Image (cartoon, rainbow, N blue to C red; front, side):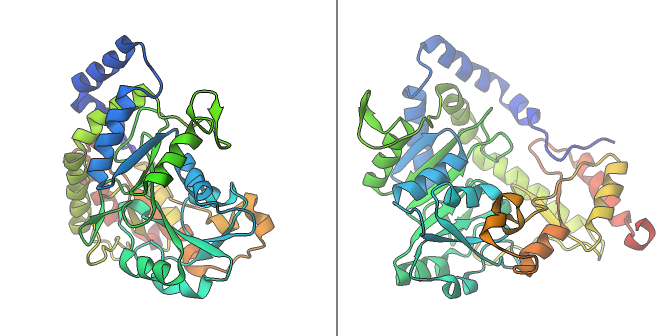
Amino acid sequence: MQIKCNVLDRQFQMYQSEYEQAALRVLRSGWYVLGREVEQFEQEFAAFAGRRYCVGLNSGLDALIMSVRALEIGKGDEVIVQANTYIATVLGITENDAVPVFVEPDEYYNMNADKIEQAITDRTKAVMVTHLYGQASNMAPIVEIARKYRLAVIEDCAQSHGACFDGKMTGTFGISGCFSFYPTKNLGAFGDAGAVVTDDGEFAEKIRMMRNYGSRIKYHNEIEGVNSRLDEMQAALLRVKLAHLRELNDERKMLAKRYDEGITNPRIMLPKLREGAESIYHQYVVRCAGRNALQEMLEQRGIQTQIHYPIPPHMAKCYVHLGHKKGEYPIAESYADQVLSLPIYTGMTLAEQDYVIEQINSWDADENG
């Protein structure tokens, strides 16, 4: 049996007629950038997230970069970020010439709130939280610390569409919730797309101007902007998937529960769920000391897996100039050496998942190197 880590066309097939109708609606409209579909999606996604405003953008990375810029965080300013996140989170900081200050993750792979205060200096302007792998971060103490030190909270929600902490949706705790709609996301488009959600009208308007060359009115450029517009086609297709997102997330939760109950190999560390936090299982991530051997064995038996992420940002070649050394963030580095994402996707059959579980349970690290 051949099993990919992610399969995108099955969810398309589930709602094929709806997607095709939406695409034809856009094609026949004669309007392809910043039109009615974008407006409707922004209203619908804002309502889903529980925020007043949504601004559609070209990507999740642009959402992060522009959020930092809209807060006027720049050269010499510091932003606290977790050390095991994807590089895009950190790029949102460094693209504005600000300095990322890393803190270790907790046992749930998210930012360890207990490590934040010791990382704060008089140059700290914000905390950028990533809800990694789909699980909501421990937001209550993070928000409290940010309030105490008058820091902005920016949420990287690229993997947490619909996940809640204490019943409140991710993306609603800080001034800015930054979403990616890359095709592999739980709410994935059919190309690059992203958005910022916020309750701050002035902040939202600044992002709107920034995405469109810094203008509200064509050729009237009020600020220095960029071209980062969510196009009509992606907005229309996202509207279809958004209407089904809760059921799609429920399917992932069901698959995650089957992994939780089915994987019994004592060498495998299953993901933990924090009390009060929800996960929509963008990834189902296990850990084991023999990760590379396990991945190789699964590959030989037709099961594709991925490593999210093999190189922590502080060890990335592009950030050598920051001066970090191996061993500086041992927990993040340990996770990088041990994490493995198992196949989980819309339309995954129980037979496919049972095969993955069977092979993992049969793995003996001593026999397989």
